[in-house]
Length: 189
Image: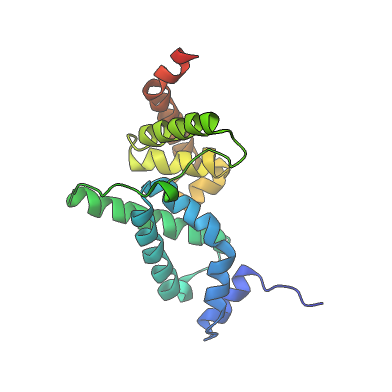
């Protein structure tokens, strides 16, 4: 029985010239990296561009990996940084986005939900997503990592390159802003 190579072994193999190692590493983490990118960026096209930028950066900078953190933490940080870079470029050149394809949008709806419940969940997801994108990129990234992706404050701090207290503060302030922005949902109940 052969065991799967670790992330660190795959990265080292890539640096040593193995043509398949980097692809295997990316396939292993693609879903989680995509999830972070889509939640930070909101629009699938922007998330795809940011994720592609991140993969190119990781491919080129693999030899610079020092091993101070897990490979996954390093990859997540590269994705978050690529998202921030793309958000800055978007802010510098604002444009009117094309309408999103309904089939590709994020939704809390389940295929098991009846149509009415699915519509309510989809509407709720849209409102929460819109409110989340009214936050600053730093607060949004912290909330995505901690509240949506389930990272600890320490893990999120390593990914974001800041102190755990900073992540805790960003989450706290972001949650407070979200509570105000989504207050109308509580009043409906």
